[in-house]
Image 1 (cartoon, rainbow, N blue to C red):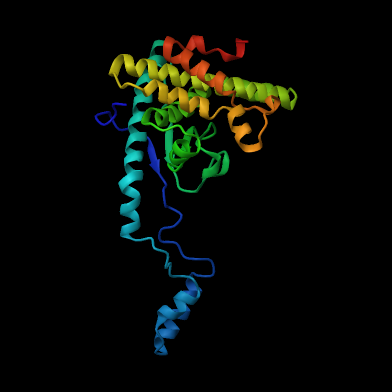
Image 2 (image 1 turned 180 degrees about the vertical axis):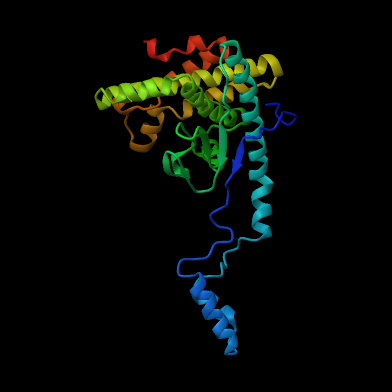
Length: 284
């Protein structure tokens, strides 16, 4: 994927490592500092007090740790910023054609866990979109899972993940997400799951719509890129994930769609570039 020369988005909020920098451990605070001062007056090394109360973090979070993270992760963060900017350009143009204003989402980078307007989430839950604050959240370590655990490597596979979450933002702006939540409150759990599947498949289709227009206007694709995205879509289908986790498949519990469905709808989007072709709620 040709991304290095792309525009960087201004809507990236970097929270990586924020919970581990400059923090005082539980049991620390003013009381510990007073004890340290008293110890110093008595001729005792105050570091002994601080270390015993956990107020000095001896974990190897140093310049070396920062540089090790920045070498690989910061390049990924740069890549994510470019992809986000490209989705902004595409959806601003498409919304303008519809006579609407596109409100750009914020993408939050985090490590391990994060607090969003939709609640507390851990990295293990994967990237997600919160309609309440209109922000996308991703721990960049997910891309390692995508590559090694799900066997879906490649930069365009990574771009597909961002574009899918942006697709949920588009659904929010168009009022689709509110309609789905309203309907889900009126039906059974199985029917609510089916609505969730259709919503996720539409986000896949919207991701394909972005890829279509990004290629048409900016020629971002290289040989093999589309195959990378299709492989990623297939790798995170509910049937494949359930079979890997438990050895069997329960279609009634699907919330994102099967591998074949996810490939089908991403393909529809990238071939047509037409959001009107992404009406998964009316499809068989």
